[in-house]
Image 1 (cartoon, rainbow, N blue to C red):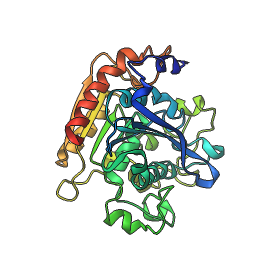
Image 2 (image 1 turned 180 degrees about the horizontal axis):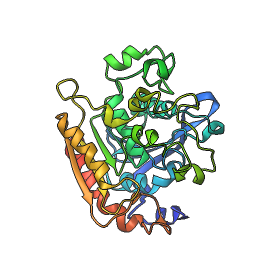
Image 3 (image 1 turned 180 degrees about the vertical axis):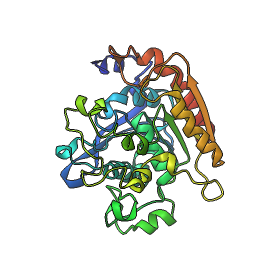
Image 4 (image 1 turned 120 degrees about the vertical axis):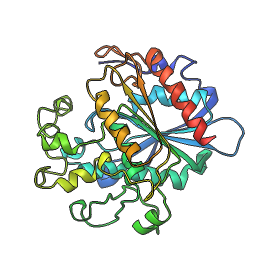
Length: 333
């Protein structure tokens, strides 16, 4: 249970609204009639453009919306000269528990394409964009970084193993997105994410009651691609949406510099799993900086104060955000 994040929104050190203008709940796509929105924070400084930070929230792909990282968006917009986009995507439980995992990732890809097309209207520099997320949001961000060149605009995921973005600008094809590198970003920050769904699906963990997020979401467990597919018979589908299986060798495609964090007391995405992903990036020759946040638990970037975990945004998140923003400033400014 959460202490309402707006309590910290009244703290000027976290949220100084004089430093930004807020475009709240901007609808950027409506896949199958489901409205998707983002909050866009634009600096009030009189300059033509600023770097852009695109944020995706956590919640095990089944819980929460962008409100859970609202304090993070407010803090960055209040204290740094960035355009901040806090983005919602469909959860697996949405649309009567029918959203498939490739559609969820397609929402993130679509959001990035919408931002690339429209962010200059909000003082953003489309050539200076970073992506970030925590937990499930880190996983989503890693998919953008690793698989942003694996695009389709028609057909079924099971046939081509490519992602269909929920939003595509008019007169743009899948080949355009790939050939023009329209989903490329200049930096990424991945906070305490898991990067492999194939293994827990193969072990019968993620798609069953063994995954507590289904219960918390008041949803019936099911296959993430529908009940006609499973990890044992369709491993290629599960690997195609697992970032750790989609890291290109640097000679094939150079990824943007990444700052990857873990929390030493994390029991949801333990340190060893994140270190495995960092090692895979290093083995591929990719640029990754790793930081383990000592004496911290999962979800330390969440808004407000969490009774269940004991996390407190003011105490726990701000030291991490200072490190994150130092990294982004070194890459984008």
